[in-house]
Length: 263
Image (cartoon, helix red, strand yellow):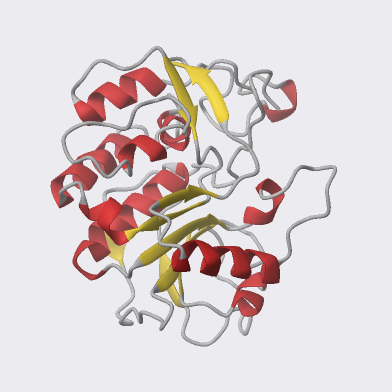
């Protein structure tokens, strides 16, 4: 946990090198459900049996061992990716590949989102409860919603953060370093970064409507993906920076990033 608010770190660590994603894509055609909602799941080694309980169309991007046979519901689209760039690499790959064929709503999820959906002292959120929440958000036409139980306040270096936690030493190359939130913001948007950021989807679990994604051109997401690929093993914590910037990326304003303050 950080001392600023609280933080949830992704388990999608980068351990391999690779080139721009898009290779190894499956040929299965995506299917949009009657609800207009699709899940995009960034998996490493997590048990995805919860997808059966959700019962929603899903695209799984797999960066670890192949999921056990019979684990996933029928019709789930599985795409292998190199294990680089944390979930930012996964989500941006999906957007670049599917930009012209996005459903009305996309729920971007980690392989085990449930650790971040309720405070640790409370009863964990069940797959059925997550399904209900996602469908309610989609029906309400919510343009952007972080699914974690908290928001995260930080400065341009990502402080306060827990990336120097001794218990995490050696998990990735950027351990012990700050997070280049301001530098990544400026590289993405070409304007000076604010002094403070409030991340509304700090764990990389969120629901985004199609118009919020399409408010920025495809080239923007290609450049964002290239930015992630310059730090494939997260040695400079670029992937961590994206966890604090999704609300700006999906602000819905094509030429200006979202204001950093809370709503």
